[in-house]
Image (cartoon, rainbow, N blue to C red; front, side):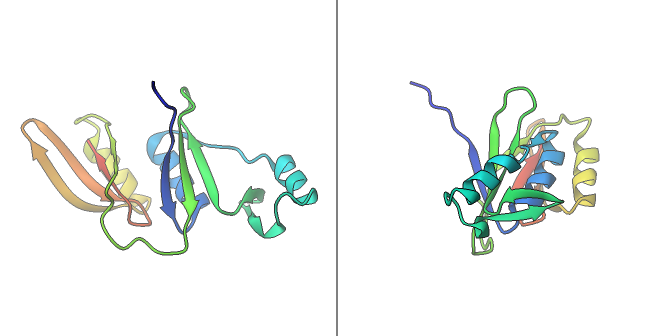
Length: 140
């Protein structure tokens, strides 16, 4: 039996980090359903404090997803109270191809990433970077 899943990344600013990752991966930020959020608050299903305005749009405070533009696969960015303190036990490998690797690393560094390590195993190379909140990912 196969199960559907989504990857969840803990963070301190889900909406800003989701925008960074959507840009990094070429995915889409999942649009907010403002009418649904407002209805949930109006009906008492959620407190007003569970919402906020981000870039002029009413959103859920504690999470923001991004979607693969074709498959609809999701990555959810979830608000947590504590900052990241140690290396991730799971990370994403973003495969851009060796001919695009350095340009993609430079692009993401310009948007707040930091280079951590350059690796090679036989003919395969990768660059480990961190997103603006310190979560590791590899550009391969």
